[in-house]
Length: 339
Image (tube, rainbow, N blue to C red; front, side, top):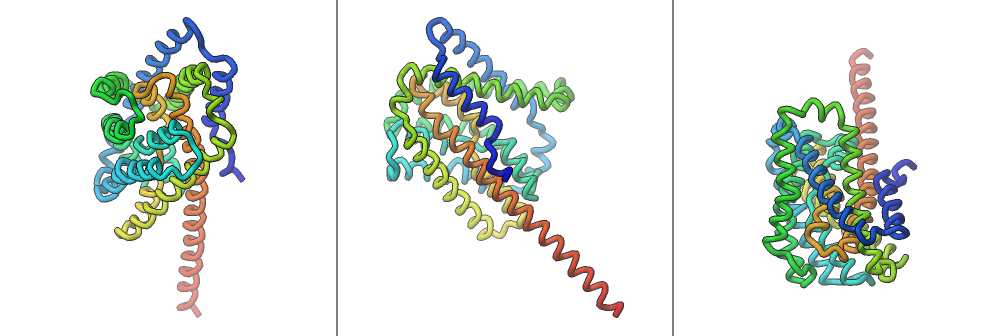
């Protein structure tokens, strides 16, 4: 069952967390890794901007009803569920873990996996490119504001000020814009080296995770997070994901979207970006808290890939079955008059 294989990035994240657990950065290495992390985040978002094609966005930009619902799901529905989840406290988790769930709920959607799964399921790929890219870009503005608005209300973030939003703009938005504006000179190189850029993305995320967990290990994260906590995080991730998927599916059918658009809404409106979330957490939260706060996001990342891969394959098989039935019906219709 290929759908149950661990995502390669998740495997690398596990190895990175183990490395940070046994060999955390200490002393002067902390400053070195802090500088490397800042540079890696800037490079990561520069590459995101360089990969963003205006032509693809324009091609899928006409489906405004679809895009509005995806943005609503990502930045209104998900955060509302996050607030409800934190208020309800249904699981035996610490306040820091609940902060992590609240944080993942305000993040933008993934880009690569949303588009890949939409394509696999037979959805509207052009619209998925537009929605996922717009979500990623808007998230640079909206997610820090939601952190300040929602998480400060619960007393979870000691800062959350305009200074933090300024850091987000400087470290994430400026490299993103510079990368996108550089496309006229580097677009062909970007297209030829997408594999290399993907590795750069992963290396940047792993570096941030190593730095965050090194700090968390020094501050005793594994004395606060046990096996049952990890199990409860998986349960919480599954519950949150299933509620969002059910609401998106119901809304897509209620509002009369066709099958291709339904698939796009389902996959673009239910994802949360690890690539955006980890670097942003490194800027928004105190160093000692980042490791434990991104833990729910890391687990949710794997859960969303597994569940949505299963859904995508079901959509694909249903489409193939429908195509076979249509061919049989057409064959019978053509054979009828001949008799």
